[in-house]
Length: 502
Ligand code: NAI
Ligand code: MG
Image: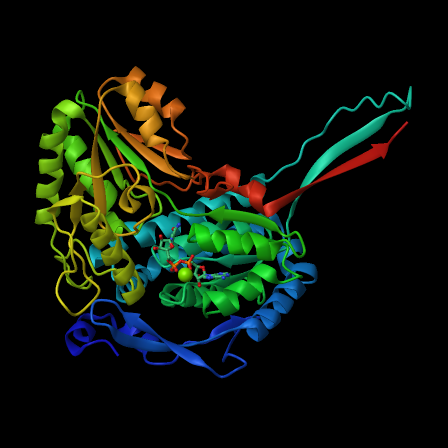
């Protein structure tokens, strides 16, 4: 259990939620793993277990996929009206809003993020996503298409397209925004009439499980949403490979994204991938420097740098380089690092011991290769997975800290000469998820935006998300776009219907 001091601050319902081992959701029922195994999910600020969670594997995945298949083929989900489906999703959003505090606390306990951020960003964004998608249920349309058919002269046809749900969907999500990633995936799947087997990350299963409870309460029929908690190599791999899954949607590392793609080849299930990034954040000397400095700091330090779109390569025009580096370092030093449940905390611990090792390993490799830490550069404290917000300079483009995703609060600051020089440097990465541009010259900003190979470009802002804005990657940052109306294509098949009428 969490430490007594943390427990005393917790919402009663959260304490109750944590008082019983957590189960798997299959066909509307909470069940133990077939193997009977469980694993502990930890509070990363104390390294103490929070609660035991069922450890699902291939056997549980098989049962969950069967339930999802039954619910897809025979259940009421596909036959109810689009309006009814939309109302169920909207009701889920309402229930989530009523449980905002519970979600925020579970997210903070399980992931480590500051409670103020979970309350203001993670939970409201997830609620909003479901509302946005609830609105789409009644607007998913095909088209009537005039056809000419040269080899049947004189014949008349009525042709139209239908957009149908793709079927049973496997969704494998990460731990950096546990509830929000569940929402990004579930929202469109439910809106289009698919049924789902969701596998939360083993580090952060709790908010998905509360979401499962509320989905049942909202009247989403049994079997439409199944949740199998467990590890990636077992439960995740079984889902990606399952022959009766029609589509897999994955968010996580590029390395595992490639494994998911290979596993999906067996039955050629549809694949969408939202993977890593090494996003360039470009500050020109004609920017509002104060705003750019704060923006650049928040681009990398928000969520402890555990964002796939983190602005981890900070490119600064030569003549303001020292000033911006100094400013970002000052911002870094001011960040209050501590347990997420402390309302004053601005940066919590990393999610796990594995991530602590990984991020510290990158910092060490950078420093060994000759980079210099203007601030930070090591673990903070000895208990909990805390690291110092870190600004590295004196890097070169070949260093691992410049090329690879660190997924921690570590930014490499690099000077550039001019608008031409920056295009090749910014695009010098296997990734293409996001980019930032800071300048008052709007035509320069839009010209650069057009040249950057990135799925999202933020100009004079960073980390701005909305349910209506598509998000996803170029290059090895992934396949497909989530959110916005673009995501509906990932969850629907197009059927062309052609009738001879004369
Ligand atoms: P990961 O890619 O291993 O985990 C993400 C999800 O995939 C989890 O649910 C996990 O259980 C599942 N998974 C793992 N192996 C699998 C497999 N063989 N088949 C199917 N599913 C599998 O990421 P991990 O190990 O937690 O973090 C490693 C690095 O990945 C991070 O340092 C970061 O660079 C990157 N990452 C990127 C994220 C993003 O938002 N794009 C999110 C999380 C991690
Ligand atoms: Mg992994």
